[in-house]
Length: 267
Image (tube, rainbow, N blue to C red; front, side, top):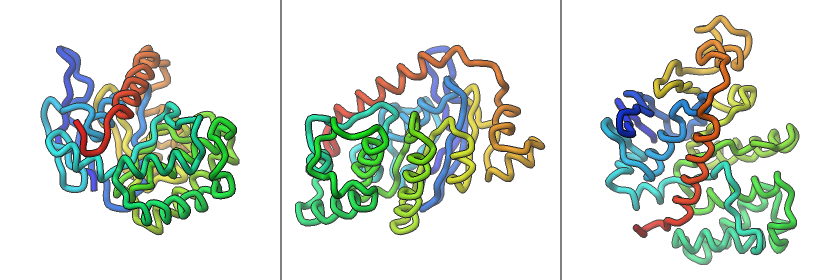
C-alpha cells in the first residue's frame, strides 16, 4: 500500500532524509518512530503530497504522490498533531463538511457519518458543538472524520498526545476495530513507545535521516538486547535531548496549515 525506495530529500546542503526504503502492506498498522528532527515530518510531507522528493521513488496505492497528487489525496486520510476541527460547528457538521469536500454522495455520507460516530462513541453528541468536547472526544472525532471518505490509508500523527491512559486505550480499540473491519492501513507516529509496541505490527525507527532499524517490536528488542521497545529505541537513537525539537514542531504546524488549505481535486 505504501512503498518507499531510496528516498532522498535535501534542503540546500542539508540532507533531511538520506536514501531510506520501507514498505507498508495493505491492512497493516505501521509505526514510524524517531526523535525530534530525525526526518519523520519530511517523510510524511512527501507521502501526503506536500513535498516532492529530491530523488527516489514513493508510491501510495500504486500512485506517485509527487505527480498524481489529486488522486493520491483521495486514497488517504490524515489526522494532524495540531487540532483542526471547527469548534463553532457540531460534531455532525464537521463530519458532513468533510464529506462534501471529498464529494461523498449524500446518502452514503449520512450512513458513513452515523457508522463512524457510533463506532467512536460520539453519536449521542452529534448535535453538540465541538467547543464543548473534551480533548479525548475531539481526538476521536478527528480520527472519525479522517476515515469518512473511506480512505485506504490513514496517517495518524501523535494521535494520543496529551490524552490520559484510559482515553488512549479506548481510542486504539476503536482504530483497531476499524482496521480489522475495513482493512484500513494505519501509518502512525508516536512518542509513546508502549503504545507503538502494543498496536503496531511493524515499526521503523529513523534517526538523522536514516532508518536505523525496522521490524516487529520483538525484532527490535532482540536486535538491541533490550527488555522494552523504549530501551531499544534509546539504544538505537541515543539519549541526548535533540535541539531540533522546536523547529520540528514548527514544521508540523506549517504542514497542518498547508494541508488544510488544500481540497481534494484542487490545486
